[in-house]
Image (cartoon, rainbow, N blue to C red; front, side, top):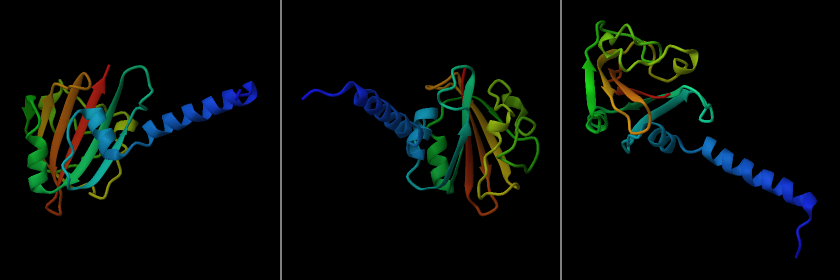
Length: 165
């Protein structure tokens, strides 16, 4: 059976579009692990991801927040290989916003304050307690920054940023 040339191109286009949509709409846990090279604990209450598009060819990054319990936070943080750590200089803040003034000692591992990195909207609110920031080498990008926060409801928030230059 011979395929008509007039149907070949539309079929190839649809197959390519399907493959692209499968990558773009991949499950959040898989995207988190792909982007940051870190395993997500089984019991996570919320995952939010934002940043530059995956296809953007220049300097780009991805930020994500995980909301989890204290034991899951300890499990998650145990997989890090920090090169630098920083204690906060203030006692509360908004983990979704710019945090350079909260953890100033990790400027070598910054999270940019561009709108695409501070547009995380979650259920955690804006009054969280910063605990520690970690600057790490990244298996996936140029650097990895992890921030640990305690939320008002005794849960913990982990903010992760990976940068690709």
